[in-house]
Each structure stands twice: as C-alpha cells, then as structure tokens.
Length: 418
Ligand code: UD1
Image (cartoon, rainbow, N blue to C red):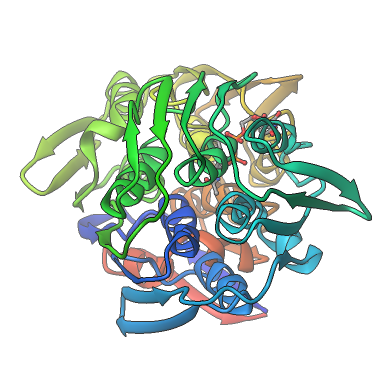
C-alpha cells in the first residue's frame, strides 16, 4: 500500500480543478438499474468508490463502458443478480443504496447490512422503514436485508432525521411505485438534488428536491438519459481550507459556490478572503487566523464531511475554537493524530476544543476515514518537516489524483510505496 509524504510550509498558489461529486455519482450510477435503456453519466470522478459501485452493478448484469476519462455508459437491459454482498457493502456503505432501485426493477433484492463504521454506528433503519412503507416485505436474515415486492405502492413517509442515504434509497424505489409518495423531513443535500435531477431526466415525476418535502408520482417506466454530475463540494471545500491553512492564494475552479456558503462564511470569519469569481472561488489568506465556533449540521449547515479539515485549520488560529459534531457520534478520530503533530485539542462527547496556534511538526500519522485523511494532509501542508500519512486507500475512495492536483499548487507532496 502507498503512503503520502508531505514537506510542509509551502503557501499554495495557483488554480486547482474540482472533480465530479463522489456522493452524487454513486446513487446516480445505481439509478441506471431503473431503466432497460442505456444511460450516460458525465463528470464521473475516477475513484475507488466509483469502481466499487460499477463492480456491484456489473455483477447485477449492467453493461458498463467508459466513453472517455470521466464519462460512462451503463445499460441495464437485463438485471440478472439480486444481491449486494457483505464484502461489497462493508467496503462501501453507499452500496446499500442499491436496495431501492434493485427492488423497484426486479421485485427482489438481498443486500447486506453495513454494520458499524469508524465514525459511528450508522444504522440503516430509516432506509428499511421507508422501503417497507412502500409495501415491500422485508426480513433481516444472516446479516442481510431480504426484500420482496410484486409492486411497490406509493406512501406518505416521515424520516426521523433527514438521512441522505435513506432519502436517496427511498426516492429510487418510489419513482417506479404505483401512486404518490411524499417524503417528509427529507435530506436537502446537493447530492440528493443531483440524484433527483438525474431521475427526472429519466422521466421520473418528482417535485420538491432540495426542500424537506419531496413529492413523487410513480411512473411505470423510466427511459435512458444523459447526465452531468455536479462538482464535488467537499473536495472544493477541502481545497479552500488548503489555501487558508497554508496562507496561500488559490482559485478553485468550478467550485459550486452557493453550496459552500457555510464554509465561506466561516473562512471569512477566520480572516481569509473568499471571493466568488467567474468559474470558481478564490481563497487567499495573508494575516493571522482567528478562532471559530463550528457546528456540523445537515445541509445547508456546516458539512460534517469538512469537520476534520476545519479542525486542522483551527490548530493554526490565534485562540480557542470549539467544534461540535452533531451528525456522527464518533467523528473526532483525526484529533489524536493531529495531537501527535503538536495540536492542542480537548474532546468531550460531541465537542472538541482546539487551542491555537500550535506549531505542527511533521510526524507519521494514520487515517481512519476519508475526510480524516484529508484533515491530516492539510495539517501536513501547514506543518514543519515531513509528514507521512499512511492508509492512503481512504483517500483513494474520495479524492481524485489528490497528490498531483496539490503539486500543481506548489505543494511538496508525493505518493510512495509503503
Ligand atoms: C452521506 C454521505 C456522507 C456524509 C453524510 C452526512 C454518501 C455516500 N455519504 O452518508 O459522506 O457524511 O451523508 O452528510 O452520500 N441514520 C440513522 N438511520 C438511518 C440512516 C442514517 O439513524 O437509517 C443517522 C446516521 O447514523 C447519522 C445521520 O443519520 O447519524 C446522518 O446519516 P446519513 O445522512 O444517512 O449519512 P449517509 O447517507 O450514510
């Protein structure tokens, strides 16, 4: 396995391009199961999770063909499989979202439950309750959800909390159910909106995506479509923080500015200059950083997927910052690693108190999840000497060509075999 080696202390300068959104691409690829006609998806990031999703679909009989570097055609003329194995779902939880479209298409699905993960218990009860409310018979056996439904029936649903995955899974089942479905307290995340637009391009009748109430009128069949995945707001946000933490000046090309308001407001409050320009977002930081209070929330609140990166930044602020994580119960695993680099962080329950500024000194560190890895990379960019981040496979799940992209900004970062 590879590791990332960084020599920190370089202010990043230049332009960096944002890839297509991973979290939007995954359910969009799975929605190809809903039609017998080919769909073409553009701006698909070349990431490990995308390849895992394509492998899952291929196993179900979907014919997959890359048209160019970031465009893929998927043709589910016949669906021959019904299962997503434990092996698959445990490597990528988002595989669980195959349940809805597979069931809607074939009347049958057997999908492993994901189990816990590094950042929390992450149950799938809301997915299961939702699909059951659409009339599916569901049994939990041997660690698998076994679902059957001759036809799905529209229903009125209320989600206990606005889960992104549950909203997506239910949407993909409901678009082909008989009658009307209402999802109340639905997730409003841009990735849910992207999936909604893809489904509509396929002929689904959906209203209210991007709001808390999604209305779906089921249709008998969906047709082929061509769709562009939106840019990845979390990757873009990570680059914005990279500019701020290194005291650099970076244009993040095609960053989805309106989706990053929560971060932009916080970066400005911390003393960075964030300017929305034609074709992206420009972030510069010359003066000292100020401390912040940050609370993760569902969209449009501050994203939990940028919390680790923000924590790295706040180790460099002049004063005491407070970070509260409200989405996942165990998402401070990066903090002890940052402390190994010299950060002063105290944690109690869902709150982390970060005292800055601390000089970060390069150290070998280990990542526990995708966004934690990025937090450590950012700390390495701001630190002295050499930082080595191992378990790079986490990064490969969600950041396309990260080392090359950062090198383009002048970062001294390399990927080497461990
Ligand atoms: C998605 C994103 C992930 C992001 C998260 C929150 C993908 C592939 N991943 O994950 O990067 O961090 O949204 O923005 O899109 N919950 C339940 N029961 C359920 C489902 C969720 O209790 O059935 C809880 C979770 O444990 C968590 C909260 O709801 O505490 C939010 O999770 P959810 O929005 O479902 O996140 P994911 O879709 O798994």
